Image (cartoon, rainbow, N blue to C red; front, top):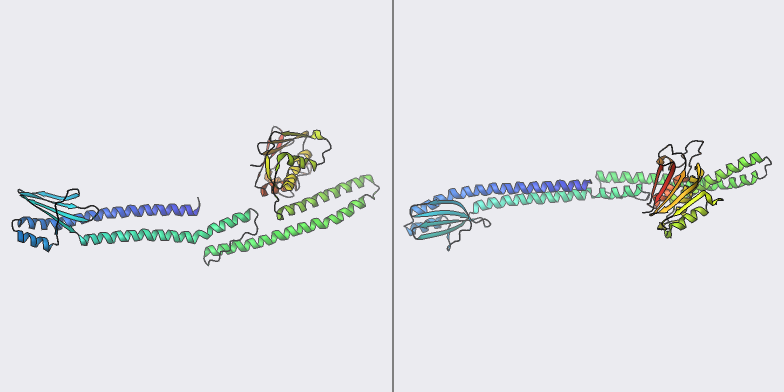
Length: 396
C-alpha cells in the first residue's frame, strides 16, 4: 500500500472520529441547553400562572422576559417539559431546527403561545459548532499540505523506476531544501555517476570490439600460411571464437544504446529469418510445428538474433536431435533433449557465465536474448520437463 493511500485512510479515520466527537458534543450541549431552558422558563411559567387573572401583570412578565406572543401553534415540536394543573396545563416545546422554545399556557378557556429564542445558549452552541467546523477545515488543510509536501516522492519513485528500467537519462530535478530535496539531489548525483560509468563501459566495449577486428582478420590470413594442418585447424577455431565473441560484444553494446525499430510481422517470418542465419546443413535437425501464425510488433533484427541464439544453443547442447520449434498461442517454444541446467536460469542470463568446461557454457548468447526480450517487454521463460530443456518467448 502506498504512503499516499495510508495517509488518505488515516485522514478519513480522523475525519470520521472528528464528526463523531462533534455530534456527541452537540448532543451533550443540546441536553445541557434543554435543562437550562427548563429551569429558566419553569420559573417564568409559574409566575405567569400565579398572576394569570391579572392581564396587566402577565403582560409585564412577558415583556420583562422578552417573550413574544404568537398565533395558535401546532404541537409538532419536541416537548421538553409538561405539567398539568387543576384548571389548566403548561408545556415547554423545542423547535428542533430553529433552536427556539415555545411556551404553551392553558388556563380555563385562555391559551398563551409564547416564543423565545434562547440567545445566550444559542450563541454557545453556535460557537461550539464553529470551533468544530474550524477544526475539520484545519484537518483538511493539514492533509492537503502534507500531500503537497510528499508529492515529490511520486516524481522520485517514477524516475527511479524509469532509471531501473534502462532510461539512464531519468532525473528528478527537485530543488526543495528539505529532506525530500536532499534525497532527490542524492539520486540525481548517483544517476549521473552511473550513467557516466555505463557510457564509459559501452564505449570501452565498442572500442575493444572494433580494435579486435583488425588483428583477428590479419591472424586469419596468417593462419592460412601455416603448413601444419593440426595447428592450422586449432588456430582457425581460436580466431573464429574470437571473432564470434567480438561480434557479440559489439551486438550487446548496440542493443544497450540503440532504440528499437519496431514493425509488425508474422511469427513465421521471424522463424524463417532466424533459421536462415544459422545456415543449417541438414533440415532434419529441426522439427518445426507452426500451429498459429500470429502477429508480432517489434524489432525484427533483434528478435531474429534472440530466436537464432536460442535455436543455436539448443542445437549445440542437444543430446538427441531434432530440436523442436513450436509456434502457438502468441508464443515461440524451443525444446531440445539434454541435461537439466545445474544452475537457476538467471545465472545463465548474465554475460560471460559458463556451465562447466565440458559443456562450454552459453557465453553471451542468452544474455543477448534476455536483453532483447526485456527491451521489447515480452517474457522469456524456462523449464525442464520429460528430458527437454524448454525455452519459451511469450509475445502477449
